[in-house]
Length: 201
Ligand code: GDP
Ligand code: MG
Image 1 (cartoon, rainbow, N blue to C red):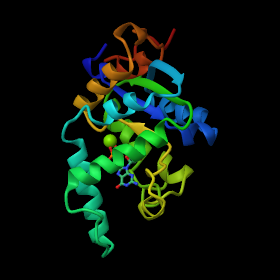
Image 2 (cartoon, helix red, strand yellow):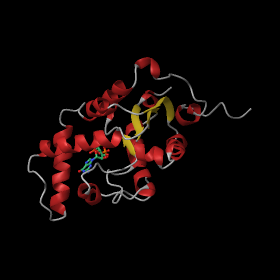
Image 3 (cartoon, rainbow, N blue to C red):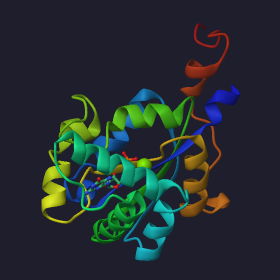
């Protein structure tokens, strides 16, 4: 089997995704593109589990803060702070409230370009501006301006790892090695085999 087929990514259906009855729809989209489900759990996360998840990358708070400052400035608004890390701290606190408000589905998906494909199907962070056809674009309407007005995290249904390194760290954070199942899906022959010579009798 091609080495490409081994890439893995972490997806979390956030509490709003579960409440909107979108578990099946989300799984359907990843299944139909050809990815393989290799791990899944359902629980209410602990606040420290959420904080650790978002701070696995020590730069994440700064990056998310910079992104927020940029989006305030683009709208001609004054950001609540000029220090990105400060804004990042606030975002993490809000995420802790959001992500522990109910059960979530934590999943590991495997396949060629898994990280990139899942991000493409999930869409941009803000549902209001994310593309039509993506999960965040099609199934919810939240915006930075609504979230900021109400001092809460933006509700965008789903988390997906941002790059291959982030995926490795996040998978290790949510799953023990033994909880990720190595198995063959029959369709992988069609997706990855060099020759399609097992079809005709
Ligand atoms: P993602 O990778 O597209 O989920 O986005 P990030 O990793 O940048 O942010 C993680 C999560 O934090 C997002 O999915 C949002 O729920 C929330 N979030 C990020 N940036 C902001 C922000 O500027 N304001 C608010 N209210 N929430 C944010
Ligand atoms: Mg992210």
